[in-house]
Image (cartoon, rainbow, N blue to C red; front, side, top):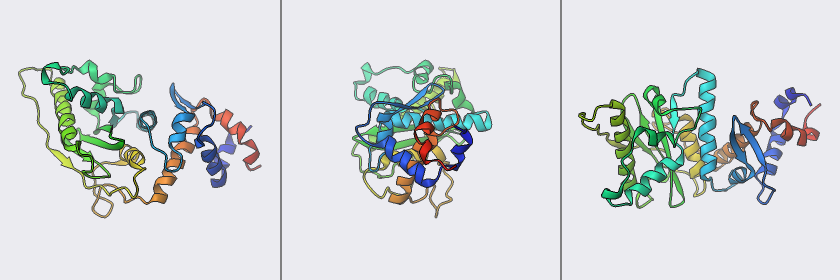
Length: 271
């Protein structure tokens, strides 16, 4: 099968590919293997219409975004912690202070993609992102490593009752991280003001994970969308992103399972 046929996939065929791999109840299958990062049928099903995006889906999206940066520019300017980082911070801060972990630099590396990005890469990055899932809602933290500004990106604003408390815990942990970078215990810890970014509200209750994926992918704080830093996405836009992500990842030229998928869809390819 000629791989150049990949470029001739019509929107109709991509729609069928998306529908088939996101259907609930299909057998457990690995659809994407991108340098060891796996996307299974379970994660693909999360991207079905109105599906809830899980931790592993966000982790794969974060990896793909960073990998694309590395391939295009030779560096990663948007470093992304995986969701288990913010989960660890939240769990730790639920404990009494005397029982909380004293974080060291080595602790942070567990929340970065191995063999792609290191803790030291944060020092040369433009942004550091930390997606968070709490009470079945996704939002995201963004830290401008150049201006030292800390932003909260939440498409449902303040509707999570513990959000402000979690904001405080995460910014304190980021302050601790940059204090560790100073490598001088005599230095005072930096303090960063928390900015609640005015991002458009999501048009439904099921696309917070897709909104966070877009923050990780394109947010840079520049007010270029009607005086906001993100576009006001419609239901149709967000559904299109679901399909686009799945098709782009499965049809990625470095996906080890791409040819297997194309073989399945061979009858639908144009001659």
